[in-house]
Image (tube, rainbow, N blue to C red; front, side, top):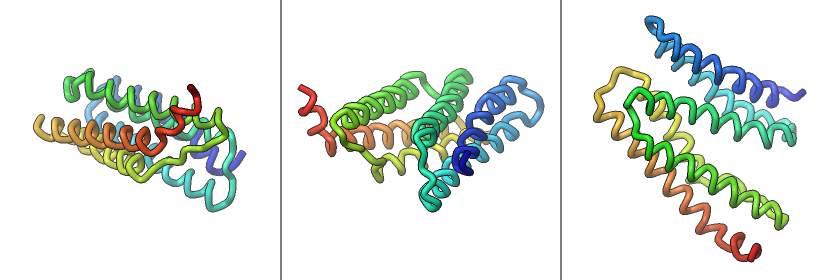
Length: 174
């Protein structure tokens, strides 16, 4: 097993640990959960770098890495929704974008084409991670709203960009 794949598995393992810590609710649990989230997020950047630099890109990594990222982010967003810090419609927008872009990539793959992550998708991921981190701190509700707005705006923009740049993918499947 490659080092990158081990880091991806570590991230997968950390997701339930992250949630358990949040639900235990002991004093300081938010900060422990935040530390776990940051470590898990960093493994995403590190495993991608290692896989590319060592030419260790595997089918397991191509499948599990984005899945682990999405589950980690949704775990945090759903926690914030349950706590009343983020509206459910915002999480639905993020979910819809992820499913739509994944579907677009599957259609493209069926036609022998790979849709690589675009710059706006990377900005969306980074801004979402930063906003999630901010929301773990004791900040006023206005900050929750700003973070929700940033997450939704970057999510919508990147989703529209993916579909606009790859609109021809939808045509060859008619």
